[in-house]
Image (tube, rainbow over all chains, first blue to last red; front, side, top):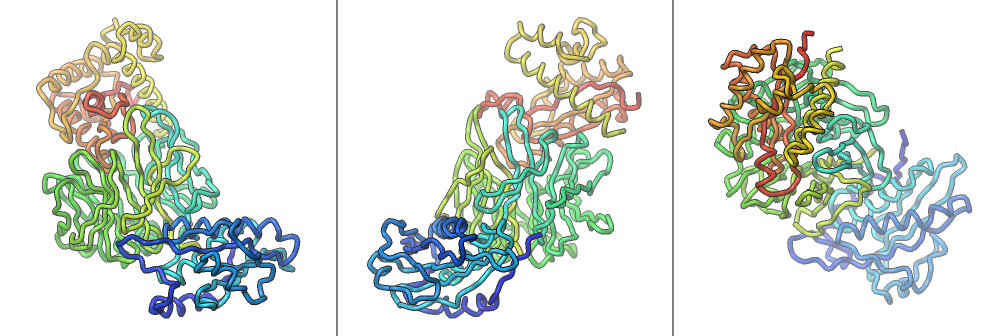
Length: 440
Length: 168
């Protein structure tokens, strides 16, 4: 696998606090109010040697797209630039950038090193303060990894200005959909978080559902009908090695998700008419039954510390959300609003549950606190479902299916403030996204 | 081996499903398509799967979010049970389905409830449980594709798909 060298990584952690505390203009506080996007200039990176030329503008393009894609930044068009940046080390002509109202300036350089690796350096400037924000960073990898390095640059800029954790250097596993509704072909696929570098993992002969990334981002769990019955499988994303995890005759298993230890899987299994929640230890194959009710208990998701599970159950008569401890004890209901609640997913920060809500014939993606308070609906449509969290817990991606005989599934993302609803570009229909952790 | 035979059965199930779909749209075409359905046999032969599908009735429908069998459904299933007892060389897979209103996982579990309701009823009418398997497709395989109740009503179904005996 590609190995990234990240110099001065520690600086990121140190910078986050002072930046968050400062009162200057270069600070985006993500609140629920309307935000005027911060104007940012990302000129083409300076070419250190000719071999790196092709990457200079491509990397700047990806950095600018990452930043403006958040809705928190607005890219200043190249045509407005007064002076180009021709040297990475020369002093910046702040007046030229102030004149076009650039508040942040990202300047970078690319070169191919002696070892054939692509080296990317960048500096972030606070134009109105006339100073550098944080220290410059330098990344190196094989040239094929240029998009990842661009995402890392953008992550550093985003982190320094917002105080939030990074998330651009990540991937999304999903189900690629083609064909009409009554004969749909579904294939597992992975792509970069921004839709680039799509790779298909299965051929489409069997129905596949709901891939879920492992905590290290190298494996996925999913449900497949390859045996004729829904069962859960583990796949290595790089090698495509496949392993069936649960093959009890007469049962159906689905909705698997990793625990934070990367070896415990929580899932649901149906026997007869009842669906209960189980855990499975991948290494030993040991299973443990967690719920015993005649109801439908499904869609389980671990807390980030691995001690609790949130899931949906219709034990009360309709779909609602419950939290239970792995140690046992009776599940506690947390959703009490009007309507039905399903597909709960614990946020990576641990403080929120994202869910699908059905109410008055509409579907919503929403978030609530662990005790069910502060419920906020972020979307509304004919059919929204299946939220997944960005690695920093700021953005939720989900499936939206359009209405009617020609209905198509697409992936959308929305900020947890409810702003910046966007459709992801995918070359086919797409459903069931699973956002990976930040790549290493 | 077991999986291979299941895969073949599933292909047959899909083929039968396709025929059924066409039947629902146009009775004239049904004769042609029904005849073309490989392995389904001649619908005029009471011992054929085609007869089961078209004359006995291979499916029962459910109301929204329910798996309770209506009296009408029970009448169909009584016929299915008699046919299965008369034709012991066949086995069946009961497929449970849901309409598109609902989340994916819940609908899988709901389809399983519906298939299980049919399974239990057929067993109560004397069909050996060993001849029956259940599978849920949730909302993955609608037969009608519009987004209103006229289609949803037909998609909330459990279909009994006849197959060659698993032990055979």
